[in-house]
Length: 283
Image (tube, rainbow, N blue to C red):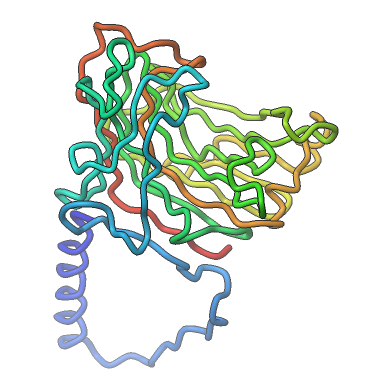
C-alpha cells in the first residue's frame, strides 16, 4: 500500500522513543493463536510491483468474455489495460482498435484479471480490497468471485458467482449473488442489494463469507446480508456457496452490457479502476 509503510515507520519510531524514556512495565504476552485460525491472512497482494500483475497470484482471461451479455470490450493481457504502477493494480478500459478488428460499437479494450489456477478462496473467509472505482454511463467495473465447480469451472450459473461490488453506470455500489435454481442448474437465481453513490476516492469493499451466509461491507459498514435460508426461499440452490468447492477472484472493467446499456459516445475514455490492496483472511 502506498501510505501504510510511512505510517508504520513513524509509529515504530514513536514507540521506540516512548519505551526508552518510560518506566519499565510488565510484559504483556498476546494469547497464542492456532495456525490457520480466525484472523489468519491466507493470502494478499499490496500491488507494489511494476509492470504486469504478480504471475504467482494472477492471470488473464482474454477475448470477448461477456459478449453474450452485451459487453462491448475485448479483454487483453496488455500492460496498457492492466498494470502495477504507483502502488496499485490499474485496470483500464480504452476506446481503440481491438485485436479481433471489430469496429464500433465494440471497439474497446479492457482487462479481466483473475486468480484462477493461482489462488482460491473458500468459506469461512473474509475477502476485502481497497478500490477506486470509475463511474460513467455504460461502464461496469467489478470485484467478484466465480466457483471452481469440479468439471463445471465455466458452467454459469451452477458454479456460483459472488459480486463483492459492482458499480453499474452512474449508480452506487451493487452487491449480488448468482447461482442455480433448485430445479434447473442452468437457470439463474439472483439475490442482491445496493446503496447510493460513494465518493470518487478509494473505498474498502468486503465480504464475510460463511458456509450459510454472506455479508457485504463498504468501509467497514454492513450494507447487505443474505442467508442460505433466504436464498433457498427464492428457489436457489446454495451448494455453490456452501464450501462444496472453492472460488477464484476477478477484477475487471466491462464496457456496456444488458444491465447498464451500451456505452454512449459521450462517455470519455480511458476509464480506470485502481486496486490499492487485496487481503483474504480466515474468519
